[in-house]
Length: 378
Ligand SMILES: *Cc1c(COP(=O)(O)O)cnc(C)c1O
Figure 1 (tube, rainbow, N blue to C red):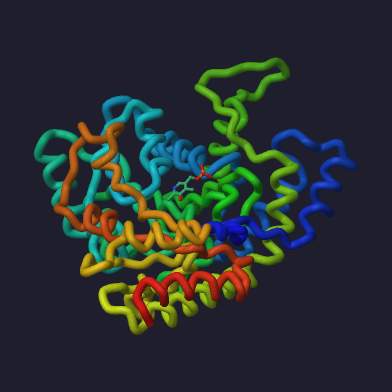
Figure 2: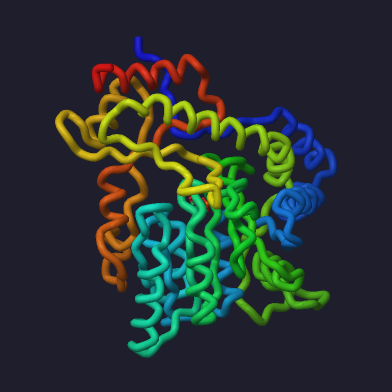
């Protein structure tokens, strides 16, 4: 008999979700927007502090799309995007018929490289177009080099969209990720640190930007007693039922963040004596990753590489997965400009994401440890 599958990251419920969902049903308020949505926005606002405005939406992808729209990105405009990320960071650029310009990562946070970012900006300007926005990502919850990246962005006066889909609860120099950019975005998809089944949020620093985002997210209705529209609208608002799940999930956010760190510590101990394998960690005390997923790099050697370990886990019904495949290597995006070398490509070839769900039990940890110990004969 095979053991039960251990997944990368499963949602965990607090038990309080039902209460808020029931309230939505009792109130017969099951459309988009509503009391749970407002309260969930307030919960997030309180969590993030820094006086941000939060617009709850139906996905993180919608949040990125609306950020681009609010920044005035149009057809043929250029938008810089970190290459090493999930495709949802870059797809909204194409929704606007704009042109993605991809930039490599640095090897310390695995996120957008400030030097290559500046090279890219200078070259695009020299070629005749200043990029309209920069999409930087806190991959796997690890903050990008915020000071360096924003210094470059400020120098050329280009707004930053901070893709914090994976980084709720991460900090850089004590400040919460998602609050640094002109816009920040979060995802509450089922695999993220908390979930609303499907959902996202757009973070801004002005109430009028939040209101404008909600205007676009609810079909761009002009003020009139009939349906009147002068701009393209979208159906991107979060539903009151989903926000009910979100309200319940906020109750366990802090606890989840603690467990994610314990899971990371567990993997540090599992791999500490294994040559050629490094667990991805905070660069220094400026960085505080939420360790949404714990990831490792495997330097290929005798009987040791990414695929061997992945298959050994798979044989024991344990899910692991290569790191995100960089966008400039994806068939969809390969014809667009790319600046950098092979940092993200190397990460993709050597990296593996490990099971990091907050419900990971001690017996499941033991199964994981045993695979590693057997493979490396410890
Ligand atoms: C999950 C994710 C998104 C998209 O969020 P959805 O809510 O699934 O639309 C965007 N960027 C990154 C880096 C993600 O991991």
